[in-house]
Image: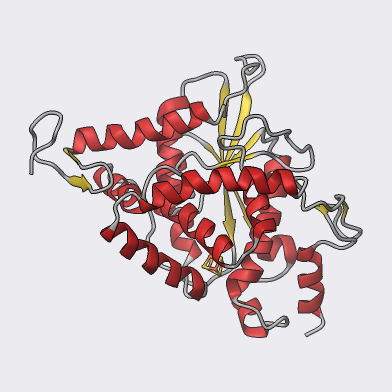
Length: 321
Ligand code: SF4
């Protein structure tokens, strides 16, 4: 097939839009969608200046999504004095997995000349995910522990690095899967939180001072297109799957969505457009923070809705093993 725009050989066909694009037009189209999302989400504060720039901390795992996000943001804002980009990587302590993706992150940030900070569960909490999986004091899936620890570190280090925004590489498939899971689980409070965790598209939301505002500039780009972009640009992305990956339900939803998308192109986009509206209504109904007052964790001082935050409770149960 030929590219719709210039007649060169097409490298991709997007069934949801009908477009056939060559390498040049495809990569430009991905970059355009990310830049449009940044604009529409008002990511760059209007009062940012070269004298008083915004700091955007990017959660960089070294996987294709965060690598592509970092590359495009660097290409777009690398020379803009109103924005400082900082990459933040988390080492979970998973043998033979994270070391390689951190090497990819190092390679990328060095090439792009971006400050890169690496923090680890072991140094911060005294645990490694490999040990957590072995002990499993709460009888939970590994990702349930890991997600709590990761959120805590992203949040606290974003603050320490002076972040005005915390950016993550969630793509369209990730977002549509989470949306569908929340709806199928009937978890409307989680829908409200999903809304609250993102500044995306909700510029009339009052920013809570308790958390660094988050954004997902890649959320309009399907996963396959992110992977193709990383491949065509020869980016140093690490693609091995984590040996503890355990979200079986997400896997089922992923398969379901792929099937739906194949039979009904555009399903992911339509899920997200309806979900954002629903999330705004849910956030209004639940008062943003689940209706619960926020306070400081009595153990670590992080912001939480309980006396002791979830991370400290998990660490305590690990110690008790
Ligand atoms: Fe952690 Fe699960 Fe991701 Fe592995 S797949 S790094 S255990 S959240």
